[in-house]
Image (cartoon, rainbow, N blue to C red; front, top):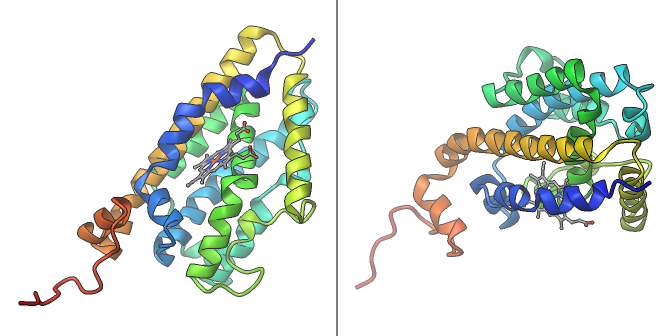
Length: 242
Ligand code: HEM
């Protein structure tokens, strides 16, 4: 029997998605402004998140619910390691410092793995479906803005097994159909939607935490003018023309 989870997730997290999309970090990014320091810091935090998520999915790969959505080919950790080596050097592990928000996100995934592994579905959905959707657009912008060489620095968003738009689309359809047929009751489905909202919130908190560095790099006034749709001033102190 279908639990209609794909629809419930999309509908039930619509508001949380809009909030995440409308963070200053995302708004500025979509407008084509990516600050290298902030981008690599985001990757650092996501490294801790994916490390925990993929550890948990691996540990619960025979769980009746988790097993259905466990695809090792979706794993992002190896690609993130390559991105971090590109940005921080071969000894990147010595240089990376996650934010509290990144550690809290990872900690929540750890708690879910220990107490209610079926809710890992929510965390997998939010990250992997996000990377396969808006993430692809974010990758194109980051690559162009930061003038990154092909295949370097944004490997997070490369899905080697799903190389084309069409392959990603087909996979997402398959993912939704599997979500709809998970062996769960309505109560668990609701709990998964609730956990997905929390996952969006944790992403939101992480982006908020990175905002301070974005503003420090670009200047508060420039950030405000970008997100209000004005063109950023060419010079912060432009002489007025009489
Ligand atoms: C500016 C930033 C973003 C843009 C432009 C964006 C855009 C999109 C678009 C166009 C879709 C629909 C794709 C489809 O149906 O094939 C989508 C879906 C999705 N996005 Fe985002 N997104 C953004 C940020 C985020 C963030 C920060 C997250 C969470 C980490 C996220 C998670 C998701 C998820 C889970 C879906 C799947 C929805 C579903 O079909 O059930 N997105 N996004």
